[in-house]
Image (cartoon, rainbow, N blue to C red; front, side, top):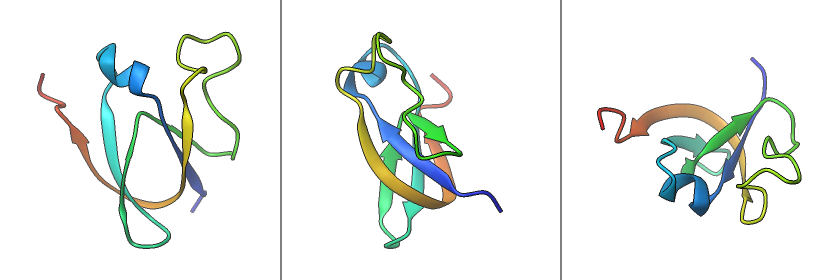
Amino acid sequence: MNKLYGWYSLKAYKNGEKEYIYIDTSNQETICTAISEVKECPYKEGDQYSEDVVYTGELTYYIRTVNENE
């Protein structure tokens, strides 16, 4: 299984992007707005979300999507 890495941008959330809940390597729930298979931010420099994105850690498995019906 490929490793997954989580990223969170409050701007992305405020602009209506979905949030995803995963369990991280410490067995803690982690909220992400973007997931990548490499430890490199998926929001590239100049992207509207690159200014406030934070790395949330390595993820072990998916729990659910927040507000996926909205």
